[in-house]
Image: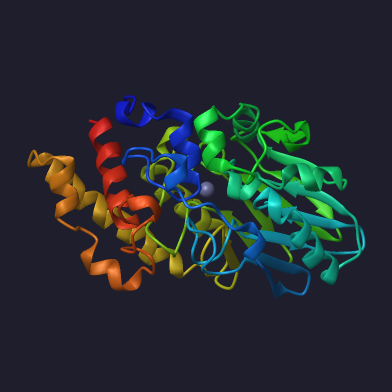
Length: 338
Ligand SMILES: [Zn+2]
C-alpha cells in the first residue's frame, strides 16, 4: 500500500491525539481546545466476568474521548500464585485501579500485558511495573512507547501517560507470529499476536479455562470501527482479525473489547458484514470518481446509525463524528491501495 500522505503530515501528534478519541483528518486542534480529562472524577467500576476474572472500567460521561467509559478496559485474572493484568488505562487512575484490585485479591501483581500502545491502555504501565508486574507486549508496542512525545503531543496527552519513565517499557516482547503461553493459577493464558488491524502491535489475550478473551480495540460497539492508520492500522486487517477471533472463540466465550460492552462470538457477525458493506459502497463511489467530501456527504452508515451508540454523536473539539471518521479512513485506505 502506498503511503497515506495526508495522514503522515500530522505524524505522531495525530496518532496520540486520535488514540484519545479524536480524528486525524480534521486539523489537529490546539491543545487548549481539547477538553482535559478530569481524572479526579473518574471512578473505577469492577465487574466479575467469571469465577477468577474481573473487568475494571472507568465511569461513564467523564472522559471526552470515551463517554461510554473512561480509559481502556482492564482485565484482572486472580489466583493464589498472583494476579495477571491486561492493560493499564491512564496513569493518573492507577491508585484507584489498585484499590479496586485489592478489594478482589491480596495476591501480588505478577504480569501485565498491553493489547496495544495507545495511552488509554498503557499509561499506567510504570505504576504497575513498580509494584512488581513483569510487562509483556508486542515488540511494535515497545518500539512505539520508547519514542518521546513531541511538545504538541505532550500538551494533548497531559498526565495520561509518561514518555520518560523507564518503567513504562515492557520487559518481555514477542513478534507477530506464534502464541506466547503463560501458565498461572492452573490457567493457560495465550498472548495471541493479531495481524495489523487497530494498530500494528495488537494482541488478543485468551484465558483458556475461564473462557474469556480480551480482544483490544479492533472491535468496538460504541462508535464505528476505528483503525489507527498512522500506526499501520487498516480495516482490511480488522476484518482479518475478526476472522481469527471467530476461529478461536467458542459460542459462549466472553469477549471483552477495550471499550464498550462485553460481547459473544455471534456479535462479530454483524460487525464484520457492516465493515464489508461500507467498504463495498465506498469502493463503488471511488470507482465513480467521487471525492472524499462527496463520499462523506453520502452518509453511507445511515442504515446502521440507530444500532451503533455514539456513531453520529459529535467527537470533542468539533472533530466530526465517529461515522465520518470510519467512512473517511475507509476512503483513504481504499484510495491508497489503488
Ligand atoms: Zn486504541
